[in-house]
Image (cartoon, rainbow, N blue to C red; front, side):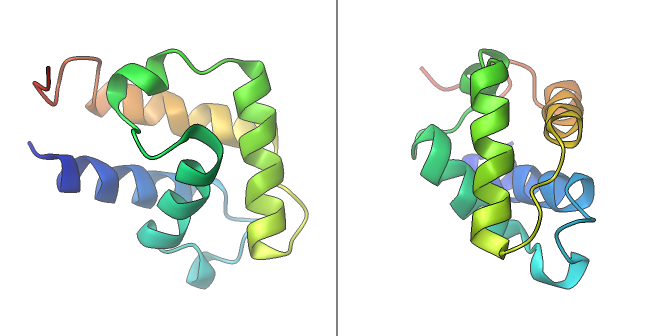
Length: 97
């Protein structure tokens, strides 16, 4: 799998998990990735995602709320999105060095 596949999958997964409160029609894969990159930086990867902590989870939930101008999704919604991504994209799955 490639980085574009990973980023598309990440965006789609977050779109699924943060709706509601984010309106489903607004939570495109691209928009969700923009929010994630704003909080975690451009170098998102399975390795980075494996090391997110509660502070990152809460920052990301708040950022989704600001970006989409809605009540932020819960920390548990964001945490569940990361769990789902980890199942499909465990560390090392992109085979990047």
